Image 1 (tube, rainbow, N blue to C red):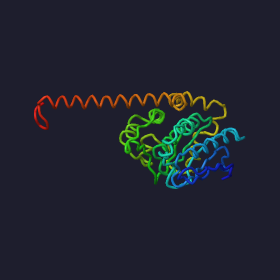
Image 2: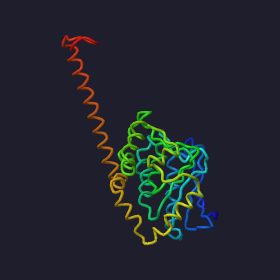
Image 3: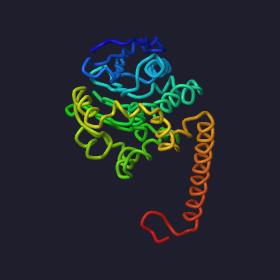
Image 4: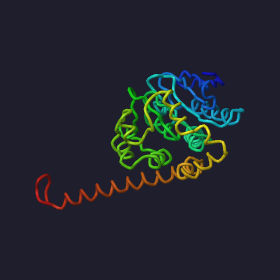
Length: 280
């Protein structure tokens, strides 16, 4: 592998930082592998998102010919364990200014993108993978999961959109409403990933689909922007604001529904028709 460049990931809060190293195999120099080193579990912090954005810019504008972009983690256990929720919720600019900007950049990137899932991809980590065009997963270890249901945090509109657009309805339901964990085999069967293996399998996958040539005409990113239009619009600053307002109204309406329901239940019970097994 030829090393192209390295971008530091500065320390942030409890995270010690790390780096992103871009390499390219001698056998196919138009494949650009971004390896993220950010122990212990490759969290998507402000610093990680910005470093990835910088790496994407260097590949596109740093004099490299169009080819295929591959991302992976050098942490064997995790592709990404998602967001650091404390850092994310503490900064209202994090979602639109860092995470969504990264997602939008990836989903419209002007060359094919492949996420090589070497280990677990949970919540935001799976979202990151789904904003790539293709996914190849380790067949022997690692799970894919959206576990917001387990800790009571509803998905934001821009987060939910990518699952709705890219996955079969049954898989979307399993991920979001059941918090189901998929291993490699079940993820392939469910349509979340496109193949199983490591970097050698990525090389064969790219070769079989002739992906290194797809970005040469200069319209690949535009084709994706139209293909995933709903997601692209939600990932903008304006889309984020509108999505937040819509979700705020939904939460308020749900609280009103619950209050009305509680009152109605009290009225029914006060009607003198009993509780438990008594006739109402």
